Amino acid sequence: MFEFVCVIYLSDNPANTLYVGSFETCAHAHSYVHENFTKEEVNWIKCLHEDYIVLPKNFIKKEIKYEQ
Image (cartoon, rainbow, N blue to C red; front, side, top):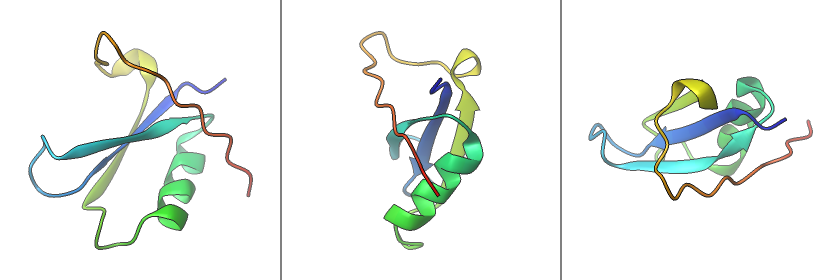
C-alpha cells in the first residue's frame, strides 16, 4: 500500500511545497527524492503517513513504486 505521503519544501517558506507522491515507506520516498531532485531544489523533505497529514479535498494520489 502507498500510504506515506512525501512533500518537499522548495524554500524556507512553508507555502512553497511540492507533493512528490505516495510511497510504501518513507525510506523509499527519501531515496526517490535524492535520485530525482538536486540539493539546490530541496530545502527539506517531509514524509508522513496519510492518516496524520491534512490533504486537500480534491487530492489526487500519485502512487510511486520505488525499486532500489
